[in-house]
Length: 187
Image (tube, rainbow, N blue to C red; front, side, top):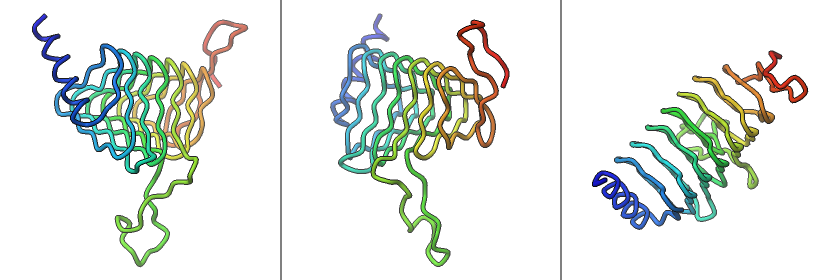
């Protein structure tokens, strides 16, 4: 019971210091770092495990963590515009999610000096009930549907429809749920 009280106090203090909007029963693990130049919102029962990093790079940037969603430890979420996790999304540890990528076109300028590549409406959306495996990278303007499984070590740079299992580099759909058969079918 004392541990739960300590967790609530730590989460409350972290949220206030970093201007994070929190719902009821949210939890931030130790060592979570926020760079909040925009807006970060964590809905009811949202969990950010220890040592995660959340970045909103600009005043209009936004990260939304849906109700009951759990972000695995040592994960990074970076938003130039908008990154949204639906309800009850589960991520493994070491997941990287960004709605942008680094610019690299000019070979006369170091990549770290070229800024980011991101259009005004680029965003990442991860649908309700989806499971993102360990070490997954999601980068660019990407929508992942609801109740999907993204296999460990995958790199997602294109949309994934609802009710799919997708794996690989680049990530491709390998199974899809068939409502008529009530089972997962290989593609």
